[in-house]
Image (tube, rainbow, N blue to C red; front, side):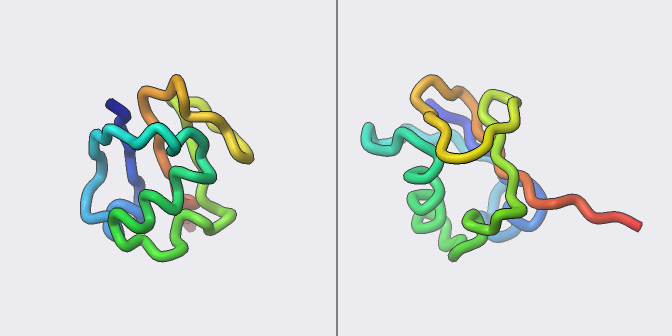
Length: 82
């Protein structure tokens, strides 16, 4: 089972901060996971925003990373401040 974490505005859009999912076997990379989650929670194109960072097992990843051995995936929008 995979733990998915949504931070900031993504948690508002998803209606949750975290969830546990058993993914279909064909969901094996970040690029396939994002549209799956977007459809599951009506996130629109929020996960396609290039400013959204992705972490797998608490490590920042770039590009189309494999999620085959992932235990946790987090999606982080940019943090603003003043």
